[in-house]
View 1 (cartoon, rainbow, N blue to C red):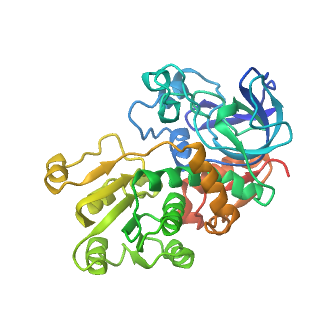
View 2 (cartoon, rainbow, N blue to C red; view 1 turned 45 degrees about the horizontal axis):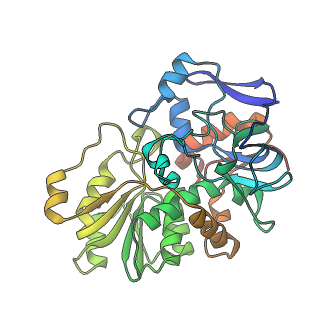
Length: 363
């Protein structure tokens, strides 16, 4: 089969590799539509944005290696012994990393909380290929009413649903979403479905803010023209937001906000309010722990998606309450176009992209 492999930093090549053998508990999927993530683009270019990431070591020492790609839609072509929830012919998506089955959480029966299992595209070969082999527990089937494009965009939505759940959004809450990229737009839509009283969307791109308003944001703030902290204070009568989702932080090299939006989140959230860290910040990013403690702010990291939550995410799309199609602005044909998808995804503002560029491998 054909698969994109990394031969080093900034060195991606389309190689011919053996079709993987199916083992117990695993499934083989023939890809239909795939898309890279912004983080994967950063890693491929040698910008390692997370502390302790094994990607840098793998790219420099263990090459060539089939890396990256965890957002896809495809058809099951073979299942290993013990896989009962999907069958050959099912159209599936990747929605969670498998549990490691060895850590203290797993040994305590809390596999759903495990954060140490294999990561698709890092620890096991990713989906930038014609086929992908992955743990059966990492995939779920999708209904016929969902398009391949929507299916490929489901993994970020699964994360968004988990983040909204983890932030304990309550009916009537005022929520601020800093950043209106894929995660920000998804989170904004999900919060409206969960009873948020007011959704305030903040970004520096007018096109994404316009879309945000169309998809349900009550207030849109262009941070390039207006102080977002003051705008949030004005919209809340000086109180501040109940919940702030920080979705814009990360590498300024790739058009993200560094740690500026984290500082804004800490200023615009109310006392005893909650901040959910969604953006992947630079390793050197710091928090004013004294201020957090003094004001009783709850600062939270991302949480795992569960079977209940992925089923809810699928229902949100199937019912039309969350729309993914308007976010998909660039679709390319053929597996040879993966590098072009990386280029567009890594420079979204330049290309007017919102969702990562999608590649149709097979229809």
